[in-house]
Image (tube, rainbow, N blue to C red; front, side):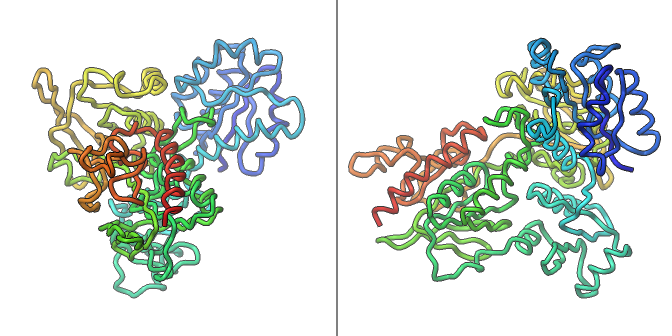
Length: 550
């Protein structure tokens, strides 16, 4: 059964149906004249085993305000996207009273109803929303990577999460299925599960996510060992991606090394609504993959699943050498953009269930497994807020746990508004996780009220930990100065005794000539996606200047 699009209008239903005719091949189109009629259509679809991908409604309905209607439909199908298509006679009149609701997540887009054929601006918004729905909710129709496993264990889920973040839809198949037997025949009989087969690649028996990343995307040994690249970027988050785009577009040979999925922590964000130029928001995965494709277009080489273990600074004009667990890269300049890792909870019974109901980061793939369950998110930053909003599309309840007395100090206003509006999300302040357990999967958590000392036990099927930042730079040599927390020092933050000729390094330069830092790894950085992207772009002129001295 095809997913449904429900078009709701008292007077212009035929116009909307005609306009949405281009989607009839892939979606079932339904027209309703009121909020109540749309609810009835929804219940019929659900009773037949179907689902609703998108509601498109006029700004005025006969039996409810449009925001009340969206709230009612959301209770029934929380995963559906919601759009107002205002008739041109109402578009300017209704906009002031409705746009604030979009900022609070009450709906996804406010559009002008098409007035003629080929209104591609309108349909660009619709296809963006349907694409977002398809990548986060629906099982993929087109599978790029096939995974064979008898169980949905932590490793299988981690592999799917990596593939989702890389924009590669995947499917899981039983060993005795037709697909499973075909892939098993390509590997030795004793190959351990999970087996992973990507299109036009040799299948692999994966023992880690990195095995899959290397099998699909290669290792630095694929480079000519005699080649010295202009720029080696360590880290594929927003800062590293921006560096790659601007460096490669200006003719510099550029290599990006990423230990996990391209996008870094930002790539796990379900929806970033305050990134410049995306009025309807964009998922971290899509932002990262668009940037990656842009960098590829200019000639950047990407290697994922590779852990950088050492950096040997060049001396007397020799290139720097970036050493990974899969090979070495020699580069005239290095940009450290390895970002940060989520701080560990360090509650042993909970740590033992990582991958089995407990996840560090948003774990977008795991969100689908939380349907009708009670879920907890630990963290007070924007990443935690975005994770909670996304999980609320699936889970019965989502509780944000934060040690502080409120979220206002650490979370953006637009997210606070979304959280306050969403009836499935509650915030529990002054609370930490001190215990947890379950039989092979998380089943309960022990919570501590830090003000009263009272400890309670609550049922929980999922725990998502977004606990703040620890730098990813233990691999750096001592010659690269860092602060007491381990973040890289640049520019005037470098201690005066390490300046050269009484002058500090340039703003994004480290204490080693030709080695730079950008994004969250840098001491004093803002820890925002846009700020990291800006630093990644800003470091390229400094690289040019350095290369001009060689």
